[in-house]
Amino acid sequence: MRFSKSNDVLGTTNRGNAAESSLCTLCRADCNGKCETWLSSLVGRKLLYPRSYGTVTAGANNTTHVGVNYNALRIQGYAYGAHGLGKGLSNDPDDCIFPNVNLETEFGNTMKTKCRIPLMTGALGSTFVAAKYWDGYAIGGSLVGIPVVIGENVVGVDLKSKIGKGKTRKGKIKSSPELERRINTYLRYNDGYGAIIVQLNVEDTRNGVAEFVAEKYGNKCIIELKWGQGAKDIGGEIQVTSLEYATFLKERGYVVDPDPTKPQVKQAFKNGAIKSFARHSRLGGTNLDTVEQVREDFMASVEYLHSIGFKRVTLKTGSYGMEELAMAIKFASDAGCDLLTIDGSGGGTGMSPWNMMQSWGVPSINLHSKAYEYASILAAKGQKVVDMSFAGGFALEDHIFKAIALGAPFTKLVCMGRAIMIPGFVGANIEGVLKPENRKKVNGNWDKLPKTVGDFGVKAEEIFASYFDVQKKVGKSEMKNIPYGAIAFYTLADKLSCGLQQLMAGTRKFSLDQVSRNDLFSGNRETAAETGIPHVSDVNDETAKKILSS
Image 1 (cartoon, rainbow, N blue to C red):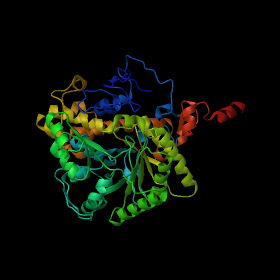
Image 2 (image 1 turned 90 degrees about the vertical axis):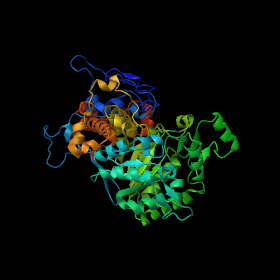
Image 3 (image 1 turned 135 degrees about the vertical axis):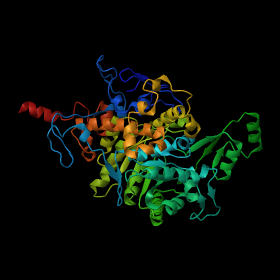
Image 4 (image 1 turned 180 degrees about the vertical axis):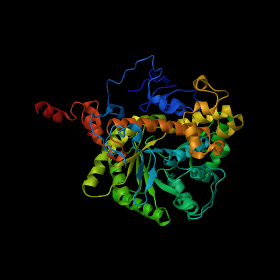
């Protein structure tokens, strides 16, 4: 493993066990810090460098690479050349500086969606964490200029949403305050970069979510079909602690476990033996038996979504095996989808069964390596391949580079789930202390600033490195409406962006479309075999020997 519990060089510490992503395996909203992502939400790009400059020297401890994983990939560096410089720039050293690296990207089939950096959020759906901290995520993502995804079941779990009866989906949803709040929050600060994506599962499709969004928002939103995710191989879950709410969810058509309508369950809840209920979504595709049936169903679904007005339709798939991966890439390409997000095992969630999350599915690097292979087969046949986003255990700027390079030229974005939820937590906790009148509204968890924050200051202007960047973007008078979670989000994104620019400058690639698999090498032979990325000792070895023989 690359990551240990603490990093003396950066002065960061994980509260719990460090996962492959560098995050704690269990990330808490009330955490006092300070893992690398948590601290980056405050100090931003400063955390790219060792602490205590002037009194220390620092050396890498990542000298071995064990197993097949993204941390076993290394990034190439070159001593000459410059590629992808923007208009008006030359290969003069004064122009070939990392701030001139262009991180803008775009995805889409006929209607392109521009993004300022190659990043998108994971699906933030019916989990209560997403609802509590949505303003930070939506406003932060909108200001940064990246896609933010509203996950499944938001309408169905909303006590205030009004859903009619019957089988006709059009007009079935009369109102959905929570879904509307989430969309409107993002759109308020959107300036043409990024997008709000609304995801559909079985229950959402039955309830008419797509029809509701199409009628109310049209092409201001992207609609996303969902096949699965990397954290679990069943539908989404939430946990509720109210018998009344559990009963409401069952009446809404969800699977609720244990069944709150059973007399013995009610009695057990009354006596305290049962304290909560799990709400589950249904599996999709259960009425399909062959690959051809899956294809026909998917193509019909995409065609229908286009027919009701959506110009942009995307697909999210999970860490299934190779057959499902090939279907996702082929069918999404054939249907003219705008983006395919491929989520590998190793990512995280709010409520997946723990041992399921540990043991099911294809790890991210294996899945993403095969995705490149399969996409290349289609491209070699002359087919236009759907743009792709890789997800599953990413948190740092080198993860972004490696994922983009591993899947190049097909990967346009990297999807981060848990990592970019952390600034929402941190910012809300700080705002709850500095603005006590907002504590309940923003779901702050602290009574006072912990030392990990107080060391930087006692005002937002002192604590957040990107405070004045956000202020410049929205205007001084508008800052009163910007939640601290959004400022923290912007600050983390600035650190990731700067780090990515530096890595790309080192590979002499000054625009994302120049990044390729040739910019990686594998740290061990096993990773080389699985990914097709050559071992460090083999890359350019023949060229090196020709130089020696010349």
